[in-house]
Length: 100
Image (tube, rainbow, N blue to C red; front, side, top):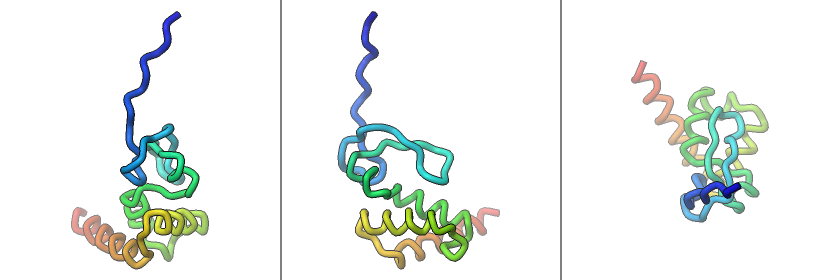
């Protein structure tokens, strides 16, 4: 029996810097991404995912506590602020409304 071919090296989709160590789902979202050890341990998700999902629920005021914790972990880990996230979410919500 032969071994499967090695997986091609991939980059973490949260930090876009370090090599990934595996694939896991994004909490609350029906998709999986590649994660490095540091990003997985931090509880952070990709910046675009935090924006998109928060926009889909109508902003942080509608977020469950577990989502607030993920967003806060993402902001901390990526060195971003909640104000930056809120501005990006507002822009995404406007874009979604304009697309209707």
